[in-house]
Amino acid sequence: MKGKLLAIFSLVALLGAALSLPAMADGSVPISATVSAKSISVTVDPTSIDYGALAFEESRSSTALGITFTATNDGNVNENFAVKGANATGTGPAFTWTIQEGAPSCESPGQTNLYRHSVTPAGGSLISLTTDQQDLALGVAPSGTKSFTSEFRMPCNGSDGTGQTASTTITVVAIEAGS
Image (cartoon, rainbow, N blue to C red; front, top):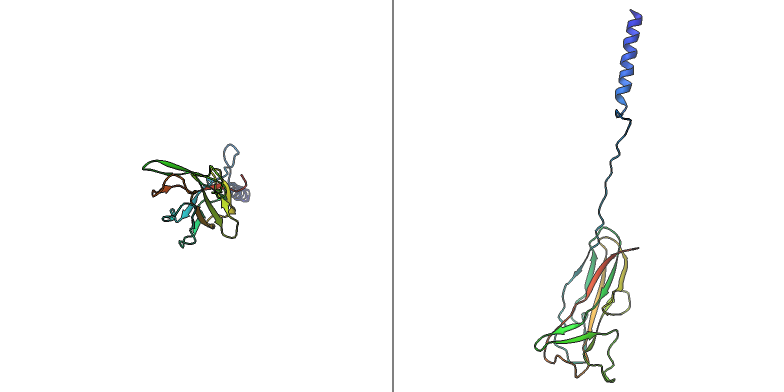
């Protein structure tokens, strides 16, 4: 009887040990894995500016209008912000002012229909916009911000568009930092 009881206890102990160990019939163990997709995104506030009526060769800054732009990293990775400008266009009759790095020299011939649009990041130097991307801020953390102001310099006297309204853009682009 003692032998049978010992055998039963041994069987129960062995069964208990076997049930407490996770094992698959084929000897495999699953590993749970998750992944998060990168989000690279920037928002800017405010999204527009009206510099008002300006004479040729005159300039006006967003600071004079009480406007400071704030670019925010809405993504989930560190980002670099780049900025670029565009040519300005108007209608009635149609005209184009070409964006130029630096202010046009109005004393030199052939400087009509050229204008300058620039931004100045907080704590940084003036960036004269072109149609190519230029660094505005580097390594902005998620939810981080970079503030900047802007300035518009009208083309030289004799340019097209007298009495008309011209429109252009400042484009802020988010790029993953380190890429």
